[in-house]
Amino acid sequence: MPWYLQFILFLVILTGLAVPLGEYMARIFDSKKIRRLEAPAYRLFGIDPTKEMTWKTYALNLVLINVIGLVFVFALQRFQQFLPLNPQKMGPVRWDTALNTAVSFVTNTNWQAYGGESTMSYLTQMLGLAVQNFLSAAVGIAAAIAFIRAFARQSVTEIGNFWVDLTRTIIYILLPLCIIFSLFLVSQGVIQNFHPYVHATTVQGQEQVIAMGPIASQEAIKELGTNGGGFLNANSAHPYENPTPVTDYLEIIGLLVISVALPFTFGIMMKNRKQGWVIFFAMLLLYLIGFSVVAWSELHGNPLLAKLGVEQGLNMEGKEVRFGQLASIVFAQSTTVTSCGAVNCMHDSLMPLSGMILIFNMAIGEVIFGGTGTGLISMIVYAIITMFLVGLMIGRTPEIFGKKLEPFEMIMAMIVILSSSVVQLVLSAVAVSHGFGLSSLNNAGPHGLSEILYAFVSAAGNNGSAFAGLNANTVFYNLGTAFAMLVGRFTVIIPALAIAGTLVTKKMVPKSVQFPTDGSLFVVMLVSMVIIVGALTFFPVLALGPLLEHLFIYAGKVF
Image 1 (cartoon, rainbow, N blue to C red):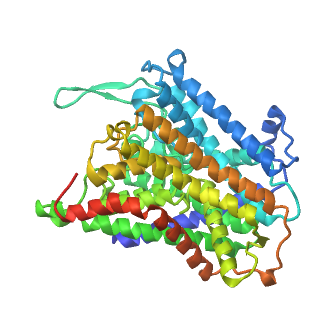
Image 2 (cartoon, helix red, strand yellow):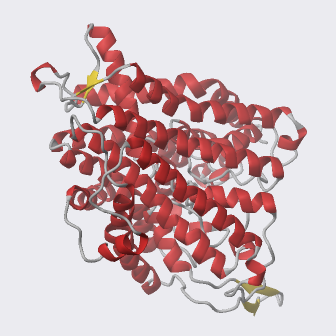
Image 3 (cartoon, rainbow, N blue to C red):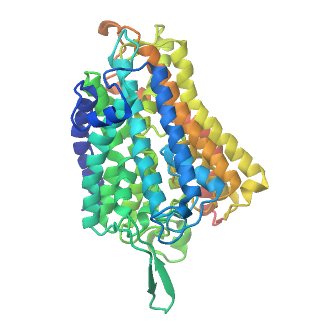
């Protein structure tokens, strides 16, 4: 089957799974019924599930659980040498690495400045990192559901109960999907055990240490929660995490499916299914534009390799032979349009234009499907800005989805769009201007700039993938990326909840005077807004990094 037919089939299957999942999630969150599975949790923690919250209370509880999680994961790493389930007797994690990791997993980034199999005990991996994989994904979904309610409701002050939304996300969405996915991964060869590491002798007579561990369970939530942090340093390129083309295919589906389903949840909760499809098509169009560039760049080949006699300049460096080019391209594009960050190939080895698209996917705020919940939030914020400009152009009060937009909403929307971009560019500028940033580079010139930019864009975008030519396990990069992760996470969620808090109090604008947001014109305007804002913000640094490197390759120079 030609590669493009395989890709079309992949999109059809993904959409076919996302639509019913979106409907299922809408029923879960719209329901007022307290079910048997969730009721014990409310009684245990003294939560009144019938009592809803204002946006400030919702945000306060959301921040509180993140602070508790951050402190717990940090302490677990620092004291893991005294705790059980540590057959390799791993010592304490260095303080800056531990802080970076705690921030990383709490913010759904899963940036890893360490090698998992050589740094973390089984207990730290399970009780610390895997638990935060569930919680961080659930927090993002809960925030998105509260944001949706602000558009669906009118003339009230409450946007839901954070603890109910969190509990339902974990019990009815993440846990069932992860159990099924984990069992399938085990059936395909992904390991799940507590054995000590195996010492083997290679055919050359050298000793090799083979890592063991409870990998399948973490692999499932790593993908489904758009987390991305691998149990092993090689991530989804390692045969113990991703052994076959079948598991690879399903892992790509897994890292996309919830984020793709949420626009349909939005449409159903808004009682306008067409609106959900429009948001989905806007995201899909951006995905396809980026994918087409990456596919052309990789399949076109490297001219320098062609000169050395490699057929068509085929660039297989950093790619697993068992997956091949197409699967590597789809995985790379999919993991950077979400906040997953899992990898089945070395992004640092991709062609420069491919790397540029991956950077752009993350730099614009992970709006192309994005993280679980936060992607939908960010896209709707772009829609708010789009409709504000439309209102200015046609001389009418701006509104969106039936709610009027006022200065407060616009200020919060600009915080969402600009704060992450500012942090990415400022920290990258600091890194390239000082020895403590440049000393970690393995590559000079424009590729070195791309590696530094990728690190901070990935952190602020809560993605977690990396151009691994940069050694980011230094005090500067650990603290810098940790700060970027916090900004990238909470300057999206908290301003979005603030917007929700004002919109939910407003009455609906009559449909007869609303600008239509459920047609193709709105898709074009929204996609154009995302591209224009991203290009205006990042074109100069992308021109000096991947674009310049692309030109140098055709001039016969590498770095």
